[in-house]
Length: 394
Image 1 (cartoon, rainbow, N blue to C red):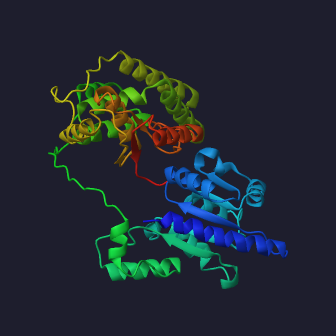
Image 2: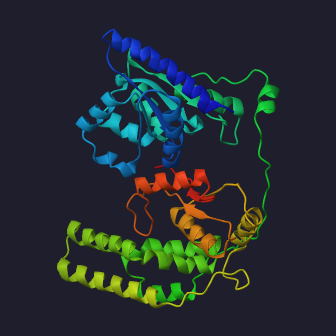
Image 3: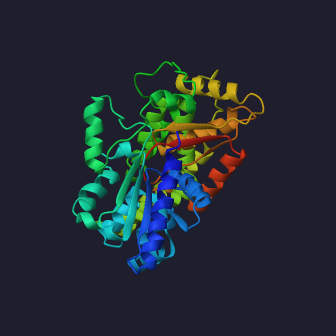
């Protein structure tokens, strides 16, 4: 519907005014384009970088923004005219006084309907924008294709959004004009049967009997049990296969070390060594386990996964220019589905996962900043045609 194009045109107008203000000796200010996820940082940066003739810089947590000093942000503000980042990054900068609101000439909120409750969009407005004198406040532009994302009174929620962002909702006066210029995708609802309760696979039972008391593995036990309902037995077992990889096992070791160095124990070194030895034993046990291959006929996949695979294999049964994004709730589910698609998906299905920068939690794959850029690039040029993405903020 062209909302990003409108944002580009607005930024151009703001930057023209900014250059004129700087020529008259006024304070330098920059525009912030705020998004709700890391993937959108790079998507919107790619558009702005092509459409603007001024310096644009993207930021996400994987670039180490948590460790940036005030001097680093000062340099970035001086060097760039537009910054694209997740809202949480700007909120943290404002909270630490690394960035002042009067240094910003325009705040753009992408998917502005998220501005409610404790979302970073709402916190930026409530904690900083409304406390700033009106003369120092930047202009605010919120854009969304769905101003109301809850099943409540549309008028009431729309007014709440306008009040929160100190903006006025604007759209086309004649909706038929919009409908004639915007193509709507065909929506298909897939129906599948669900399981009513989780269960433990044989591997999970063995792991719990041997290592169920290890605190570092509690989350993995929970994920494996939840996976039996959502994804099936094969995915539940593969939770352990992925969690006991060399890279992830090192994170478990660090977690154990932190436990015994941050709390008081009578014999911390001996206890830490014993728990680490048990972790290594768990890792060896999983490595030696004979994992079966995933197959609907073997009843080790859930009906939901089976239905999803049927749709994907139908779309990618032959060479095609189609692209597909599968949204999931959790990071580990994204990793499992990507692994599954690569094993039994169509030969023309080329999957990958994009799960953000990670937060250091054990048992979760982390993708670094440059790997994210590479995945997005390959998805655009067709080398990848299916991305599995958890829909969560970072």
